[in-house]
Amino acid sequence: MLDLAGTELSNDERDLLLRPAVGGVIFFTRNFVSRQQITALTAEIAELRPALLLAVDQEGGRVQRLREGYSLLPPMQVLGDLYRRDEKMASQLLHDCGWLMAAEVIASGIDFSVAPVLDLDRDHCQVIANRAFGDEPALASRAIQYFIDGMHEAGMAATGKHFPGHGGVVGDSHLETPVDPRDMETIREHDLLPFRRLAPSLQAVMPAHIVFPNIDAQAVGFSGFWLQEILRKELDFHGLIFSDDLSMKGADVAGGYQQKAALALAAGCDMVLVCNNRAGALSVLEFLEARVINDDVTPPTIDNLGVMKARRSWAWSELETSARRQTVIENLKRVM
Image (cartoon, rainbow, N blue to C red; front, side):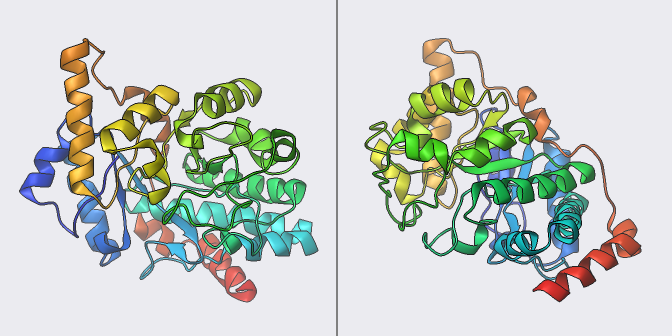
């Protein structure tokens, strides 16, 4: 999965998206001008290659790529705190917020938002903080389940991140490789609980670029122990595994782009993300294509990634006249 340079496809990007090892596109703020523009862009990509997965980070709060013309979503911690105070009222709002986010994203021609955050945090980790639903495993897990149920109602697959939990470190894995010295028992009893409880509801998981040296020497996204022994076997997770962006500094512990891709795929990732670095993305594509030719590896396929495609369609004309959408927007304004 890779990104685009601007708000329109260039001729080079059209050729790039036709290469078999490309499986998806993720959109950033720079790719967005208006609802009409992003919908036209996604339609052009879908016509060019219908099977590509189209994704965006539309969590809410400070991580919301699509803004003008879209419902403003609060940081999820606002909803998590509301749930802690009033479970009955907040459970419906959490469900409706998941539905609203998903319906608007799908109406724009995008299959899924890379959400929700399953990290447990309040104000400890500089990159998570109020992106988390809370720091109490049981309460956060229940709140997240309502949000996921709303996403599913709208037809969107859910991606839990950042396995096994990013809230225990201060550092930002975009800028460094955070090191978490805690042991496995501590992680199992806290950070891992939302992933364990919500695994049956998730279609995909994204691991963190964090090293837990007292558990395994490799960063999680490159670790067969974390992805196979813990996620697949212990948590019995059968969905897809997306790497976090291999351009993040936290991934550099694995080497260059081709080394990072090789280690992530060997550890169990089904798709690797390379964003904001076209040279890195091209290097990974060359590696994957050479592997097919030289090692007689089965050519990459995106057929098994179909679970992440939107399962129903939405039209903006339908949403603009939706009484439910207007009610949810008004309810969210009261808590923001």
